[in-house]
Image (cartoon, rainbow, N blue to C red):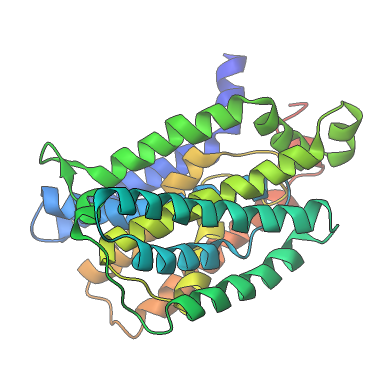
Length: 328
């Protein structure tokens, strides 16, 4: 029983996000007037998975006690590169996918190197690289457009005519990327660094490797989101507003999912449901016929409330150990 209480305590954020999403989705299905249809579920899944990938990416640096303000611009940059390379015969498309993912890895490695070896604060380093990545995106795609082979859009359809392909991609990311990383020494090192960097160093954890891995993997996941956006729109767009929105929304999704902004506790599963909660907000505003001019205001309030939630969780804890669930 004590073990169950501890598990519930540690995963309360993810459970809350899951229950909230289910409730919101049920309300949306009841109110939309068309019911539960495959096309509708696929559309919801595509939008949710797009933000979920960016949120998982953001989860990694936050677990170490950092923050990646460039994740949205990495997402935008890789989308623009995808709009240029994903065309031609299958082998060229495959090389284009590799190039896009490699770009994400490089962006993450630059962030990690500035933080680990340059001794810069994560928020400062990634704010600077965010501007650089946006400038590169504008250079590649000064105006929206591109030529992407329609075959790439298979990522936004259904498997067997019923299962959204994007959900399969998300499941693959969790099983192939997140779970092995969380169970690895490097992944545990990220949690340890976020809990207490000095204690992690004294126990012999390779802090530099953990931090670098977190930011590199963050860039890789952001590039996967850029690929998915290219598959959805069959184009690229160096949009500053899109990059900023996804950065802020990814942080909010991470907080809603129960990951501490102080680092050391949380995980990708909660961030996924947090992302779906945020995406469902716009759908609910639509079905309840809220004035479109008012919707951005309401969404902004929700984002502010979500970010404030993370601060409240920290301030209510008398000490850091209690916040992390130790000594209860």
